[in-house]
Length: 272
Image 1 (cartoon, rainbow, N blue to C red):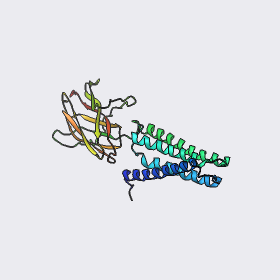
Image 2: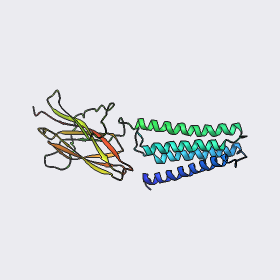
Image 3: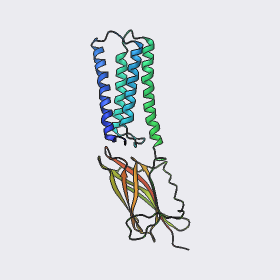
Image 4: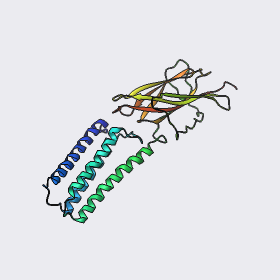
């Protein structure tokens, strides 16, 4: 049986968050009204703390997109924050006058451990999924003029350029940034960044880049995904005057997002 769709997982996470928040609000309201007079026994307090921490961890694990990177959308940040507030309210509501010191200690230790893990995990996950890993790469050998798809060379390909992505900064709204250069061996090279936007519910899209002036021959094309949700990148067309890239997200976008690609197109000088 395959994994549940991420949208269904989010519905489940939202339901658990709603129940956790409702429990915290009821508890705080009853304590404020003086309806809670008898503190819980340490064992019961520990059990409630374990359940609350497990619920909070489940919310984070099922809500956050498996492809999200370091930067969280506003709604994801809101879910993280609301979960933390619900836990804090729940803990405050349970700590009645007369509650044993050991129970209070274990309660806040468990809740604090879950929160430290959750926010630390989120930061570590973001840095781990920054441009250095989880990239989709497409290395394409020259295609014959007139074809509408790419061909892979059976021989050992020329070493692809190593992209330096530590300082990649493409302003929002900029969809292409290109640099034309000539290598030491006389080859022509066009490199840069391409961004494609996806609306909520969209999964596929295409990018077009023009080679101007055209190369003397169909170039070798190297493409790497730098930012955005996990996607499959395919060279649909490669000509001396341009290329078309087809993208397919691993899952339909839950909200507007974009994918940033870095590419290099290189053609020899024709000298023997």
